[in-house]
Image (cartoon, rainbow, N blue to C red; front, side, top):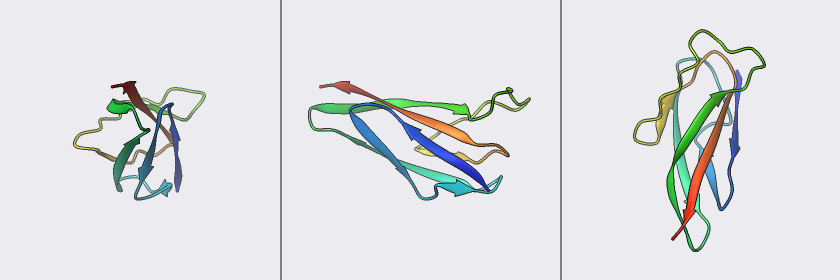
Length: 79
C-alpha cells in the first residue's frame, strides 16, 4: 500500500482511500472553504528520488494510483 497525502489552503481534498495499491482508481472530492472556489489540483510523487513514471494525471477528479506515495495539493482561490 502507498499513502496519499492531501495539502492546500482555503479548502480540503478527500478521497475514497488514504492508502492504495498500484492500479487502484482514486476518486477525489474538493471542498472549498466559504468564500473560495476550487480551481484544480497539483499532484506529485512523495519520494526523495523522482521515479521514471512520475506523471500523475487527474481527470474528472480521478487518478490511478502509482507504485509510490502521492501528494495531492488542492488549489483554491477567493471568489
